[in-house]
Each structure stands twice: as C-alpha cells, then as structure tokens.
Length: 190
Image 1 (cartoon, rainbow, N blue to C red):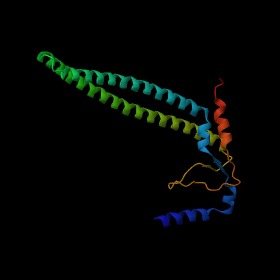
Image 2: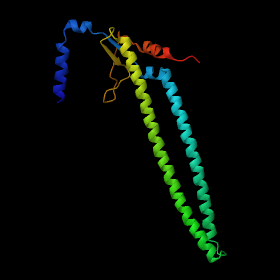
Image 3: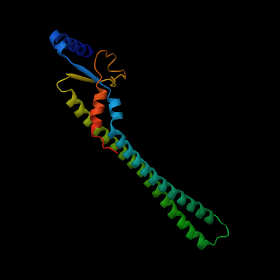
Image 4: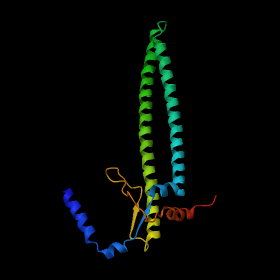
C-alpha cells in the first residue's frame, strides 16, 4: 500500500512538466505566529480567562459550602457519641446526622457535575474560538494570495510522525507578517 502511494506521488511529480513547475508559485506562512499575533486571539483568550475565573469563584463558593456541611456533620457526630445525651435527643441527632450525610453526598455530586460541565464548556468555547479565528485567518490568507501564489504552506505544520512538514524553504517568501498586518487592520483603537 505504501509503495503504491509513493509510486503515485512520484508519477504525479514526474508528470508535472518543467513549464508547470516553473509556474508554481509557493509561499509559506507561520500559522502559529499569525494566530498568536492576531488581536482577536488575545481578546478571545481574555474572555476565556474571565469565564474560567468566574467558574473558579463559583467552585470555591461550592467547596466552602461543602466544608461547612462537613463541619456540621462532624459536630453532629460528636453530639451523637456524647454518652450524657438522652436517648430521645440521640435519636433526633442521628436523624439529623443521616440527613446531613445525604446533603454532603448531594453537594459532592453537584461539585463533580459542575466541574465536568464547566470543563466541557471551556473546551467547547476554546474550540469554537479557535475555529472562528482560523476561519478568518484562512479567508485573509486566500484573499492576499489569490493570483499571487498557487500554493501556501504552513511552516509550523507537522507530519503524522511529528516531524516538520517543511524542512527547508530557502527562497520561498514568508508572508506571515503580511497576513498579521491585514488581520490586525480591523483592530479597534483603544
């Protein structure tokens, strides 16, 4: 199978005429640099950080409430174990202790559910933000390169094995700064 693919790639390359190769105009772009330099990336990351801080605050409040429940449980348990306590009072405290244990379990479950939900929401928001920004970057790259280049390669891309997709690019223009400048033209003034 691998031999067939390599043979096919070789045939395609050999099938290109010298004329076609001469007309091939290639540019490279550092997509990682462009992504990190785009002002909307910074804005989106700030929004994500604010949301994350909000989640942390709410989690902290929930954990504080949980600790209060644990303290109340400990006090009830100590009261139940008091030998001087009358039987009727002991039964009342035991009943309250069982109720408190249920409350603790419910609180623990709600905290775990909150953690799972916020983790998923954060991942979804991050993915949505990345997708929107990458889509804008793609559109800008296409509009800048249309008619100028036949092929634009990501210089930060990796192969499936983790090796760089582009090993050497001498004489091939890097248009990363042009893309960044175009993307950041729409940045609102502060």
